[in-house]
Length: 426
Ligand SMILES: Cc1cc2nc3c(=O)[nH]c(=O)nc-3n(C[C@H](O)[C@H](O)[C@H](O)COP(=O)(O)OP(=O)(O)OC[C@H]3O[C@@H](n4cnc5c(N)ncnc54)[C@H](O)[C@@H]3O)c2cc1C
Image 1 (cartoon, rainbow, N blue to C red):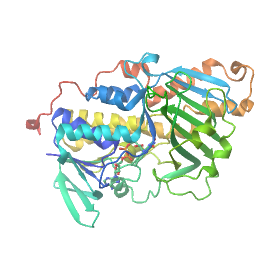
Image 2 (cartoon, protein in one colour):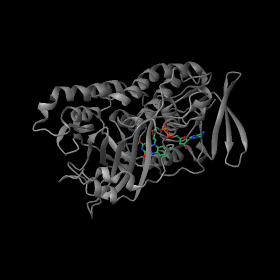
Image 3 (cartoon, rainbow, N blue to C red):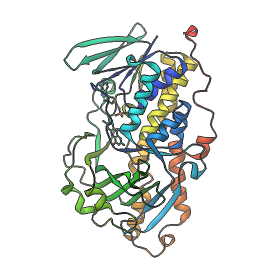
Image 4 (cartoon, rainbow, N blue to C red):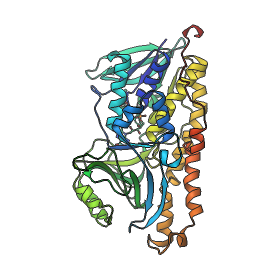
C-alpha cells in the first residue's frame, strides 16, 4: 500500500510531504543522482503558500523567500501603468512569496528527509514507463548505469516535469514541448532592492519584456539583496530553437543590447544583467492540455500534467495544489483509481484553462495592449486604458487561476489539520 512518486521536484516533494502528514506510505524516485539547488526565481501565490503553511513550513518558507508587497506594470519607457498590492498587503490571509527555486526545492527536500528519513527519496532512478498489473501500479525504472528495475505500489503519480516519461507513455505521439517564439534569459544579481523593497515589476511588452523581483532579504550590512530578473524577446516561432534546458548558460550579446533602454531612476536593467553571477537561457515552451491524465492506477501532476508558459506566477503553486488535492482524494477514496479520477476531474479543467490563458491573456497582456494603443508613450494612462479595464483583467486572471482573495481566504483547508489516513478502509 504505497504511493509511488516518479520525480522529486517541487510537485513530487510537496506530494511526499503531504502523504507523510496524513500517514500515507509513499516512495519518491528521482532521476538526478543528487538533488541540488537549481534554477532561479519563482513566485508562490497565497493559495499555494497556504498549503505550505498547512504543511508546517511557515518559518522555513520565510527563511528562503521574500514576502512580496506589490506588483507593477510599466511601459518600455518606464511609464507607470498599474500597481496592485500582493499577499498580505492585498488582504490575503497568507503572503505571496518570491523565492529561489533551488532554495525552495532544497527546503522541501531537507524537511522531507528530516520528517520521513533518508530512504523517502531514491535518487539516480529514472522512470522509463509504467503498467497496471492486477489492480496495482508498476513503475519501471532505470539506474544511471543501465540497471532496470520494477517497483509495485497502489498508485503511481508522474511528477517528472515537462519531459515526463510517464506522460510520454500515455501520449506517445505528442512530441516535444511547443515553442511560441519567446526566448527567456534569466539571472540573479546582488543589488539594492527597488521601489517598495519587495516589488515585482514587468516592464515593456511581448516583443521586449523585463521582469524583476527580489528573492532574498537585503543583507543588513550591505543592503544588497539577490535580485531575480528575466529578459524576454520574441522571435519567429517557425525558426528552430535550442531545446529548453534550465541550466544552459547564456551569451549576453544575444539579448543585452535590446535591454540597454530599460534604465530609469528606480531600476537599471543593463547593470543588473552585466552584474549577474550566472545567466541561463530558456525558450518559453508549454504543452497542449490533455484530455485525460489517468491510466489505470497512474496519473500525472505538476508540469508533467499541465506545463504552461511561466507568465502568471503560478507554475510551482499549481504543482503544490495538485499535491494537496491528490492527498484529499486519497483520504476520501483510498489509494485507488477512483481517487485519481476524482483528483483529475477537479484539477484538469482548471489547469487546462490556465495553459490556454497564459498563451493569450496572462497578466502581462495589459502591457501589450498599452504598447499597441500608444507605443508605450502617454501623458495619462487613463487616456490609453481605463483603470476599470486594468482591474478587470487582473481580477479575471486570478479568478480563472483560482488564486483570488475570496477563493483563497474563503475556502476550507484542502487537507484538514487533523486528517489521518485509515489503512483499514483500503
Ligand atoms: C533543474 C530545474 C530548474 C528549474 N528552474 C526554474 C526556474 O528557474 N524558473 C521557473 O519558473 N521554473 C523552473 N523550473 C520548473 C519549475 O520547477 C516547475 O515549473 C514547477 O515548479 C513545477 O514543478 P514540477 O515538480 O512539476 O516539475 P520540475 O520542477 O521540473 O521537477 C521534475 C522532477 O522530476 C525529475 N525527473 C525528470 N524526469 C524524470 C524521470 N524520468 N524519472 C524520475 N525523475 C525525473 C527532475 O529531475 C525533477 O527533479 C525548473 C525545473 C528544473 C527541473
